[in-house]
Image 1 (tube, helix red, strand yellow):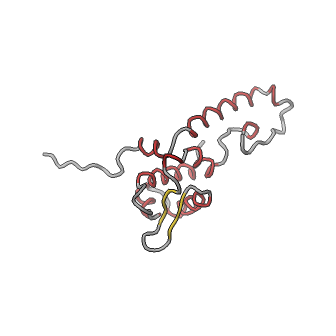
Image 2 (tube, helix red, strand yellow):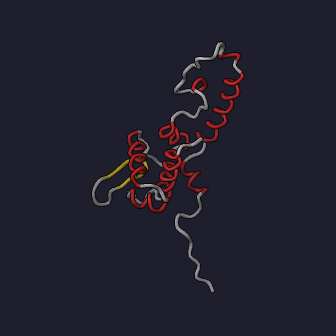
Image 3 (cartoon, one colour):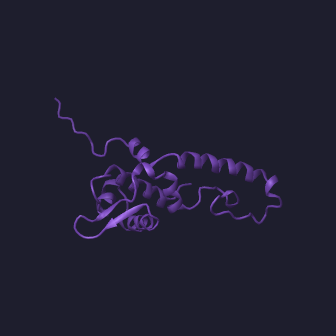
Length: 149
């Protein structure tokens, strides 16, 4: 299950993707528009920055912006930074592999076999969906006001 940290991080990154090219965005704006707790968001954005997905600027005109174009950041990149490996069990993780203590023979383990398929399916979707594609699914950034009578 996706942790709140990763969910909030995805929402913040989509917000930044929709503001791409407009300069830095203040944390307060992201928190308000996305209805996220600012204090928790501070921690999340700092972690994304420390892992090379965001840039930040202090002072006037400061805030956060994407470190690379939204079409070059995968949803999988973001989730791995904030939530850890995509694998449902450690023995099928590509980056954080750990053998299960109770497993006698990994090659014959039915649980591992199915969880490997789950990992592959999740990774296929998340690693092939860009932040730009995710932002496009969200619709317009601001509500479109109609004044027709």
